[in-house]
Length: 248
Image (cartoon, rainbow, N blue to C red; front, side):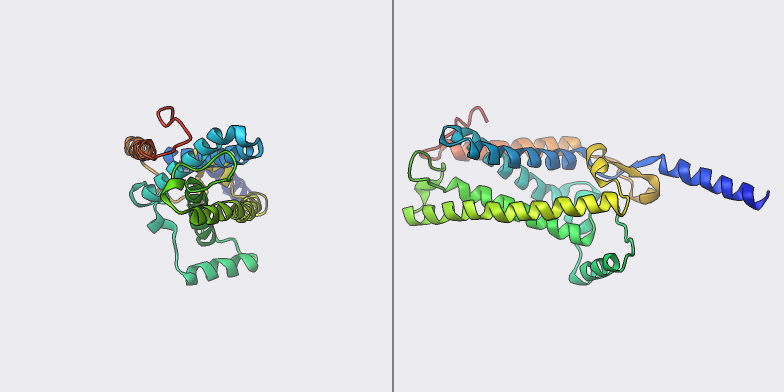
């Protein structure tokens, strides 16, 4: 076989490889991701619509709490690439990744890269904190969070202030996150947005041994129901809940 024929065969094999896919992200993780995006946007829009939409704002806040709680637990019991142990790295790995990116070297990871893993933690912590602060909030006009009666007036006002200010931190974090994602798609040619929709990445980016075999969907469903039920029961016994939790 000639050199030209070898080159053509290599090109065909390479093209064929990039046209096949292997599963990386389980559907519960993808459901969490896009649901959290929707809940965050919904909370923002309902807040901007005014006090008359406070019940809707509360609903989206509850959704954030449920989703963040789910993702934290899923980080311990979920499939391979969803687990914190799989993608959380130490400072040395983070610095190595940053150095590689800074020098133009493409260091690829099947799941989250070390820097992206820190962003995952930061977003989970800040979103969870903001939603939790809102439970104790009080606007001193029309509405108060369902747990406001459990703290002093001063504490409620402090948590209300933190709830509002943390939003701007979240906006900054989201901008950084989206920018990093676009950089991966445009510069590094990694289809990570598509992967978070379909769950699959091109096979040349995923070693066969790291292919996801099961989404553990039944476990995820039971976990989600348990979290929703726990929150609903807790809110039901709150002395001044503003939302009909039976609907939730």
